[in-house]
Image (cartoon, rainbow, N blue to C red; front, side, top):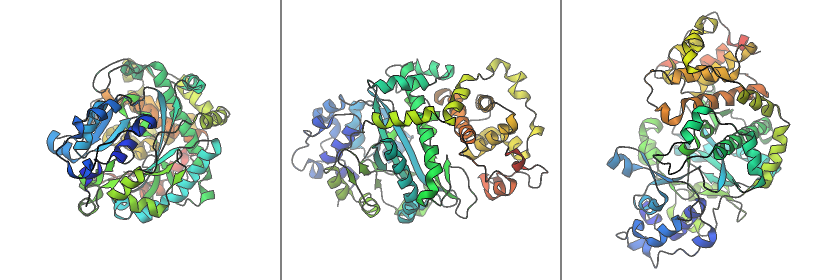
Length: 505
């Protein structure tokens, strides 16, 4: 019976990983490990293979990332960024493998959709049949929207949902259009001009703007899909971020756009045919039974446009826990990320005519207060002007302002009645991130301003174009959302005399 190390010694699996990292299929098809290397010759390390190392030179991804048990036990840290030539080492250690979104030749687009339940966080692992069935209507809705515009993405099944991935070649005429609508704040620009860590080179201003632009266009596409979800029978709430909802299982579909609230050099995506062992190392989150009893899974593609192949839901769920089946599947397809300039062009034309585009212009144009003046501006915000639930977030921002639900509550409140420009709401949130509230996150590395700007833009943009109808923005719904952190509920003072619905204008 195969284990993950046997599986990673299958040349078909390695070929598919190389293609996803930008190695042309014409090169990967000649890669061979020799007769039965993957089954019986575990003493021979893939890291020593010069032919594999040579192929990694052709990758367009900037770096690779490994995550898994070996690193936790030997490095006391869950993940590690490595140079491309270390791919063999990642395989030898049986790690989950990721590639950077930052690419030398392309701008990568990624839509990350997942099921989540705050009440039963391990449910997607324990009962994938029911959870993926709940995702299926929205998956069909999103594919319909993508196909409508002419996108033909590669769709990869992850632990709790899907990645929809496409690329635009930087030599494409559309690349300049992306630069024109992209925006990079000064704080992020400073980071892009630095080298070190996982960066052998600077992130050019053009790369930064294209990354911002593709995020805006994906944001627009997600809004369009949310408007259409009822036509496809999507009955679960659809949120941007893991927003707390008040149904019995506190379950929803999360369209995770957090990638676009971080610098380009900080984000990576899982490779097709990589193992998925997150639940094995997160027993406190998913539950001890799930961690102990659910086997390592495999991130296999559901739809590969280069081959026109699509798995049924049954085939997907059966193969993702079967090493030999997945290796055989890897031999039947290719996983090159599809170039989708045609789809992007059509989406861009619709975006130009949209209220969201006007909002993004309005948002990028505004200027936040200079940090030197925060004691006289953001710090003087009177917390008595807002309900206790909002005041508590701003007075005790750690960990409240790390939670999408709490950020959305602040944005909905302060952007109501034209109180605050959304860019200043982001400035207020940034001013909390950059103060000593005991943050465990290194904001100097992740960019506090970009995080604040990104999440504020997501929720203010939904208000601006009517995607957020604020049906749950009332005190009863806020109470039903339950516990925010530890034993602290979202509603910190029931019957306080304020009404959240009064801020729904």
